[in-house]
Image (cartoon, rainbow, N blue to C red; front, side, top):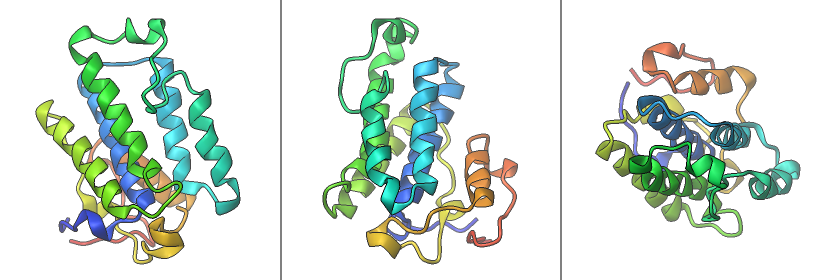
Length: 179
């Protein structure tokens, strides 16, 4: 898989890479909680959200027990996380959420790169593998002001499989295969 720069990726791809990193972090450290699962599942919905449903998706973060928006976590969530990882996990969720949120009401593509780079730094500090960016390449990533096209069901399955590692994902028609 050939490496591509972050700037060549759509915002959807960046958001999906960030949530993949979060899931890998949780797997590596055996962190599980329904509130984290709800956050992850909500973030993944961005891959297929249509323009007309975007506001509903965006507002959905406020209803989550952990939103990545800097709100305090419910006690039952924070006490379920190892104390040594709570601060890092909180920071990671914020960067994951901000990977796309920094463009919700503007056009700040450089900020999405900075947020994703922050996710990568946190992963690096905790020995969490970052997926190869080439798996997320889309030939029309610049569509919709850099958001790129919504994923097909097959593309979404392939990207979600990358949580387990590159070997778990089969190439999908329409996804760039840069070998």
